[in-house]
Length: 360
View 1: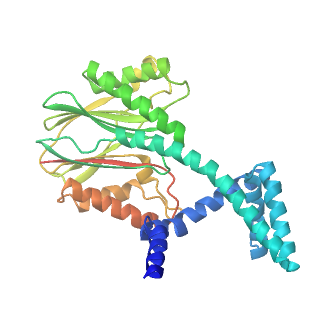
View 2: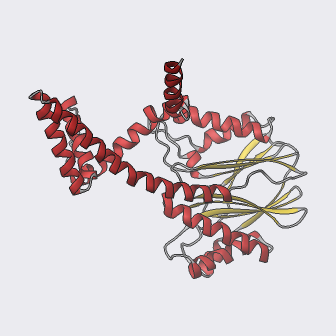
């Protein structure tokens, strides 16, 4: 009985957090990504040669890439330990082999400690970022509302928010900060909070984006830019202002067609003053029953499969036109299913955000 309990404890320890999806991602999606990570330095130095090569050549290339990523001191200790282990194995000196095995494990523990420290810091940033993402869509008597937000990395630069003005009016804001990773996530937090503050003070989407652009130049790092769409929802009427973001897709049920809302507007942070202000264009839509308004980031349309083909805007329109009779929540599920099938085990390069409004 004690032996069975021990085996069960060991099994539970190793399988507690393990899922089939995580296993698939690790083997088929993350492994190529991490391999590319190790090869970056060699690609920069020109040490990688194109063309077919044998297994030994690939092992040599990967080993060199791995060693380059280690600090000089750890690289020396690691290489010496490997050399000592090979010598012990060839000379059948098992005491030395055990010693070098222990040394290698200490080196591994040392390197992992640094990684875990960074991962903990990233987790704090991710928890903060996730806490700012709406937990549920706004209650709306005129629209079904569904949305989805997923970062390509631990943290991301897309943002999404629903800002209540009063009982009948709220704003939908979505956008994409330039850059990736931690810096984009931190700027995303600043932009979201600034957008909320300005929305409390100003009544019109176009004027809010103007003020946002002014404040980015005044209070946030110069050189930061991002695309955004801000929409005022008032009963079944929408005021949409786009600042360089992916065009909103509008499915008109009465006509049975999808069209892109491609009004003028440049990204926030590119320039200030009249050039930015005059570029912005606000349009109004009065949605009829069954109409669909679809917001998305370019991470959706530019997602690539193993053949380097993009998901594309036409695929988005095809899904909307073919499933217009479904609920907003069902449409979200269909999009996620289609994009996952399309990407397969390919690397996810960008954050994916989508918002679906369907008029009741």
